Image (cartoon, rainbow, N blue to C red; front, side, top):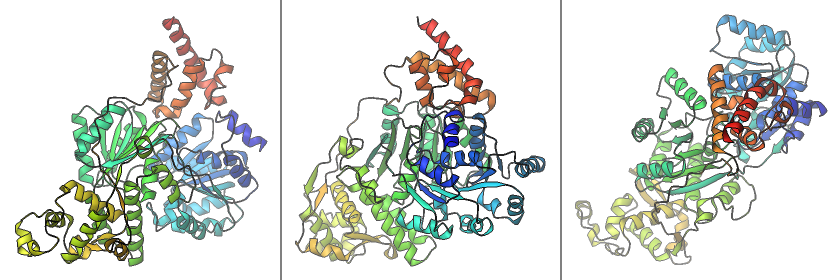
Length: 600
């Protein structure tokens, strides 16, 4: 471990390990296997990078996205690590050179996509080389029950069969108990030591609210809190991503669409601009985000309900990887639930798979509807204990008002039963409120005893009642009957008056005063901060890499706060290893000196 600490401090510029990084690294250095579950931004990559450098040979990293390999390799090379990748972006000559370097022991780390790794030619190359370890990144992709399933991951058990004595490490930020069991089974990691570092990201503030006027809600959120920040906005459809990006452009934001229907060239260009430029917003479907290493994403917004809590956690985890304040903001509505259930019903897969997906969607809706702490519920979903009040989510910061909804719920359940469990929410509300529409007369629903018994609530309030009953599993959408609402078995005690129910009172968001959340501490001079950022931007542009490859914002903040005067002092900053100290120290020290002179 002496070598490992040496590499951590001198190569990567960090003083000490975060738990359980040191234990994971010790396991690999001893030749053991490991399964690592660690939140995004928790330092997973160091768990395999350091042992790959410390052990004899080259570490092979299996990564699902070739589009991001270049940035990962650029970052390692900046720290003095001998790293490369093998993927389709290389020409024959470049590919041959990388293979030669691997065989001759001139690499510490090599990134390969799973579909390339399982090819006989690649396996033959690896057998001719000295391999120190295999790292399987985004290991949840092996799970057919997961949200990012990749078929090529199913064949990665070949590593166990062909290289039985090479240690393997599987890493992911998102895996419930069932997915972890599947990772272990499919990758044959039964002897692996498991390290579960926890799911909590305390720097992320969770906010979930109802849709009223989606675009206005989004615009208010961005202008009030993130007017110049980089962020990701997720939408359910490709069309909506493009329309939202175009509309944000009209509002003065630099927003770019990203979805699988765009050409690979456009997707690559938009992703590159997001990674390399400041303040760019990506509006995307779930096709975007896995493996994104950009540390200064200040917000992730959802314009529609995600399919599962796992998806929600994975997507929101792309915010605030640098540990600085970030937002996870979402708006949702009943129509989202109906649309997602229709999509799930039309998708392929067994009935068991569909039932599981419906259960996961119900859990996601339940997270939206709770009146208690969001973070506590989110962590409980992953079997992690936490305080009942986190102090950094909307329900903790602004406690939710609730009301005795027992009588209203009984009326809602009764109208579903009386109309034959075959009509949608809008019609059921019309019956409850005594509206006289053509449809009500067509089906003689004006003669029902439930017609007109719900005039005490307006349409939005009744939609809230139906939505919350659905979230708690009392009713569901009958997808075989064109989205009609049907009763579930567990509604009987409520309908009979044997139990009561508390419902949350939906209140329209008040227009907040502009209060942009900036990660910049108050004791840092803004002029010096901007001068350092401009220096970093110029260096990054000259080298064709994202600014965070040079230094993270957290390192620049430390620089602006400590104002080092010498190379030795510069080398003490977190994130500054020996190579970066020698390469960038003189440049940034000059910026600091000039800024101090000008400031005085």
